[in-house]
Length: 115
Length: 112
Image (cartoon, rainbow over all chains, first blue to last red; front, side, top):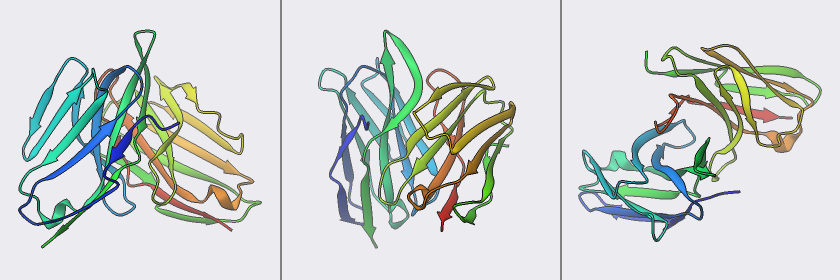
């Protein structure tokens, strides 16, 4: 079953604008990760945030995590046409306080950045 | 070497064929994974190998048979597949405990 639900399902913006994607999940997690996938290719790891962290930055990416609301957001600032891709959140779930040792992916957001 | 290499990139096979997908990494990662992805859907976990031992099988049909010959290689043996098994098959690897996965570019499988 899919743990994460993302919204919006699709997002279309102009170059230079910011893009925000949200992810909700249902169970306790060890960490939450964001991945990018270009048009049916492999996934690229973007950023990982641990359950005891609230915010993390990497270049133009900012990720937040609210474990009380079981939600996360990914902000891409000053977007570029090259950011056009599908973005997935993925959760490393906990069971009995221990990681299951697997990632479960959300449904994904398709981001289109127009030049 | 920071890559996961998957071969072949494309595969067309008949329902009576036997074929294998191959995945290789030289990053010293001790966890390796097979995911299946249908068009416009998220990747779905099939198998997890940890230290060359199968640790998770997500109730995958027996027509898919994984194998981990050593710490760098992961195979997926295919036999008597159905057309609905057509998908992108992704291999990934990771260090254990709270690290991101490195994915290969996938094998696009078509079953005819």
